Picture 1 (cartoon, rainbow, N blue to C red):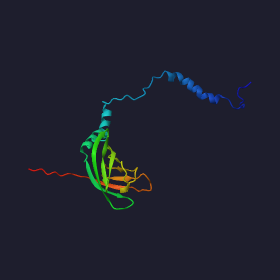
Picture 2 (cartoon, one colour):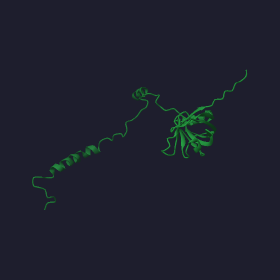
Picture 3 (cartoon, helix red, strand yellow):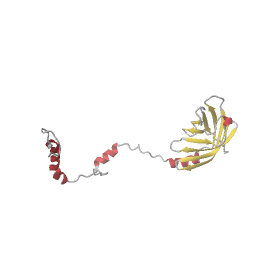
Picture 4 (cartoon, one colour):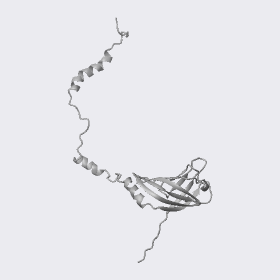
Length: 190
């Protein structure tokens, strides 16, 4: 009685030959010295020192966004003025932004204040990322008289220099906000 019905010309010997080689080598493999999982690293070796000298050392990011957020909260101008122009056309409208509060929270600066667009005055609140200079400024009142739909926001890529109105609907193309800081020149007597 055969366990496998193989043709007479075929045997199991070619299938068992690789297993026999592995079984014969097993005692040699089992008694071999264990290889370390990691190459030993010595940071003081001359080879490592020369490699470290060859690598640029100015590629490390030494920027501290938390410290910059604190600096922005104290140094950012509180008054800004400029214009708003809708992408759909129309006359430019005068804009004035008065920041009443600037608070550093981590790498973010929380902005609170009021914005006057044309003749419409509204409270605003936003966040300024101290690492990327990206700004999100929410309009908190109805400014539809100024051409800004409720639900939109101003988004800036370089704080207040490059800002745009992002409308809440695709049918409104939005607009461009250009603001510059108002510098007060105080003359001192000598």
